[in-house]
Image 1 (spheres, rainbow, N blue to C red):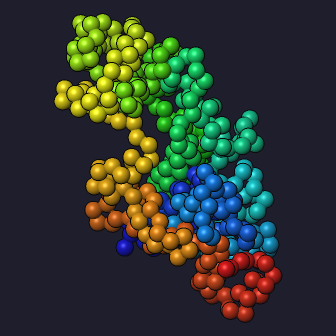
Image 2 (cartoon, rainbow, N blue to C red):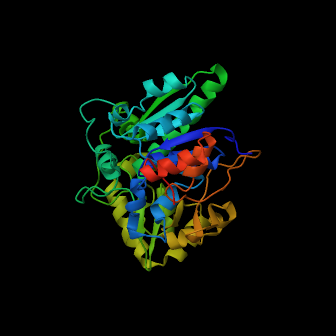
Length: 395
């Protein structure tokens, strides 16, 4: 029994943020039905990094485990009726259509809540359900740029630096996941469903709670320095430093102690709080030069022995092979019927009594269409007729 066993989620989302949120619900035991076009959801045809698969590309595979696929044409009246019938017994409906599309399809909150007042309806968008940016594309890089985050790191004479992951999509997924769980808890207490609205702009903005409060409350300008400081609101030294053979990171080290360890007289005797801001560029520059003299392993061993916060700069190959990652069981490995042996990140929250589980890998397009329709008590004759008419699809 998963913590959400017995709950049904209708996942009408595409790309990353919506499917990732729905997958989290499935990891906790919910019966997630992925409602996708008969040609397959967009992500099936747009593989990140060019990583294709046998029948399912890696992008789709990574975001759609623990789901059943219902391939249905929602523009066809009979197809829409299938979804409305499923809504009657659903607990969560999740969509990230562009604003206005759900209404045109007849699957907006007002319509569905009239059918099922206890429904938790999660609506995800790029910038909000209305407003001046309502029709702008909600794409990760565009939101990273708009959020201001790119100008919190790096040197002043270099271009803004995007995050190395799909940051806005990921945090929006977690926000929607959190919102769905909170609304389900409210329903358990009151029996009342509700509309939950999540947008990418608010998700990435509120993620910067501390930084933006320093700006809005503390009145500290967001000023990048000449050196490639890792964050404009953290005292020096703070960043990535080249060594004789690789790179390491050093974070907020005591200046006097660090100065003695790297044999840098300038740092010795400086005040950590006052001087680390006053001489931020000078501190970064002298640390940068000194660290070129030894290997990463040598510096890490020395710094850790003296309680200097430091660490290696990993690539993915290093991360996957890391002993703490292995100890934590961060990755899960399973056999997929078409993609073979799959190793992928698992579920990051540990529950002592209701752990997350992997029940199925990502489905083929419409792999569970027949099964879902049988659950609606449709006859085999009707199912075959719908398949022949192209209203629904199955392998």
